[in-house]
Length: 179
Image (tube, rainbow, N blue to C red; front, top):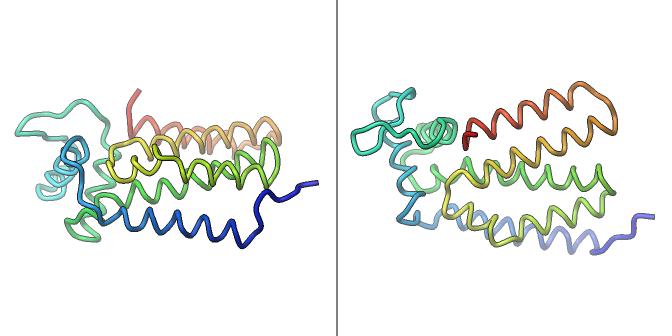
């Protein structure tokens, strides 16, 4: 039997409160370190229209792959040059990563374990920090959890779509953070 740890209304309340914290965080100014640095690289990409070269202080930036910067530049295109626009891709990946955590817990154990796992990861300080001091961490975490869920489901169900999903997740992870 799958005995609930929390009632459905309590899960809804907890996830809603966490969602509120994450949404408020979308409007908190960037920390003056890597987040601002990466936002500036994406801004240069957006302003110049050069989506091939990563430019930092007039020179090549070779530390990271392009995907994070492409997503931020696209978000600038849609929402304007704001903190919200820079943080939105990471926030969307966080939702995806939290869902993937739920599904991984469900695949390995049951729905209740999946809900608890998703609640734990969404309420962790590191996950919240990854959405306020936006670098590549939330996106990479989501890609790795998604790939892991897909590989576990492949082992359990032997469906090729799970191998394709795992490969896609790993490709996204490498395109965000590198090897």
